[in-house]
Image (cartoon, rainbow, N blue to C red; front, side, top):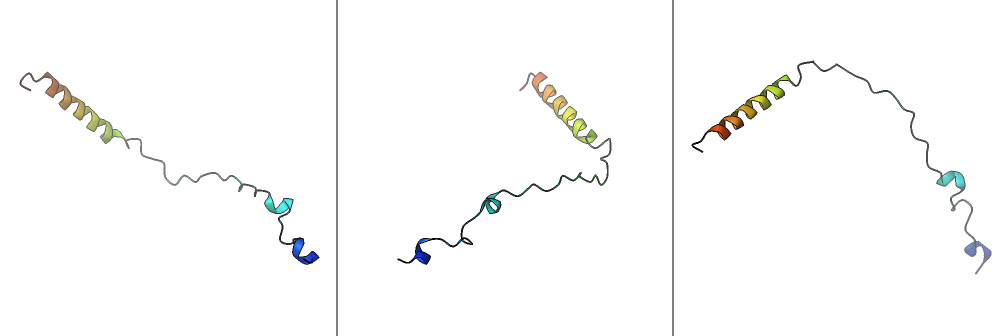
Amino acid sequence: MTEAQTRPDSSDTAGPADSAPEAPPAATSPTVEDPLPEDRYLNRELSWLDFNARVLALAADPSL
């Protein structure tokens, strides 16, 4: 074998700079488009209260 076949070309091997991980991108602050309305979860809470009232009514019903 010749010397060219036994030694890898220096451009074929990765040097320390090539194998180092890239730096993470700079942190950017998230943009807030519109603030959420204060009553956003009001209907959800009212729905849970209605559900709980129905469950308690069924639990108190002796015919079931």
